[in-house]
Amino acid sequence: MRSRTQAAAQVPGGIGRGAGRKRIKWKKVWAAVKLSAATAVAAFFAVLFLTPIVLTITNSFMSASEISANYGSVFATTETGGKVYISEKVNLKFIPDMVSFSQYVTVLFKSPDYLLKFWNSVILVVPIVFFQLLVASLAAYGFARYDGKIRQIIFFVYIILMLMPYQVTLVPNYLVSEWLGILDSYWAIWLPGVFSPFAVFLLTKFMRRIPVSVIEAAQIDGAGEWQIFRRICMPLCKGAICSAAILVFIDYWNMVEQPLILLSDAETHPLSVFLSKINSGEVGLAFAVATIYMVPSLLIFLYGEEYLVDGITYQGGIKG
Image: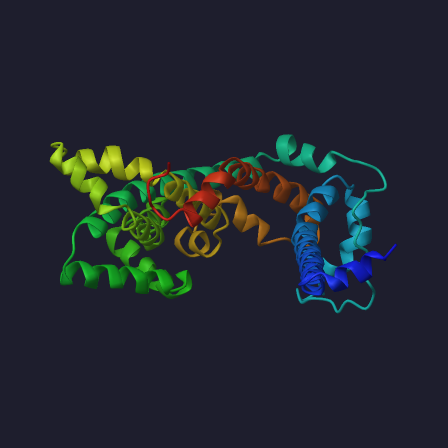
């Protein structure tokens, strides 16, 4: 009997088919290699980014003496208040020798100042998120629905303000707050936050992608501007609104410069300011406070992750 190789050699196109199969096989192998390499790189960066979070959570269950023994040299200071040169290696420990809840007991029960600062953060951030989205929705609808040179100029100004870091506009905000008489009050934080241009820019770009035919069909059915805004634009922009809410919350939840400059009373400062003023005697408390402070951001992100991705990737069409 003839071998299969000899039979294939006598069949027209047999060799070509064999070479084609080899190319397809190598393409599949190369695709698997690329997928494996991409997965390995993504896993590496995921572990790299999650390490500080895991380290903070696990170290919050250490006793003060253990934390001082592991990280005391990092936060040590000289008699004049300067930093000490670290001559020895810092011991990064992920698992405490003995689990201790003393830091949480101090934060939650023995020192109400930390909880007060936590609620200061809530009082400062929640109104900003709610009213910024309200103002941004109305402004974005106006930018998306109407065209003209004045609108283009105003929207261009919004983009320029959005590109500026907050440190650039901090001095003007201070002067305006002082002129309005709202310095050293929550209004000095609320007003600049409510009228921040970021959410306006995000929602405007999203609303512009809504098909014009949908709005025209609503107008033919007799819908007014308010009905179009409330029943068409807002439901279609649900993902973008949730995305903006998450990003705005995280941005203002971690603010430090604004309270330090605009609020002179330390009793009104949010918890983020305390975390920026860690001294050598409060390192253990800082781990516990940071863990508590991360909980709202993590819960909001985990709950709104689907909306966040949808708001960034969705192109404003009508989903089937």
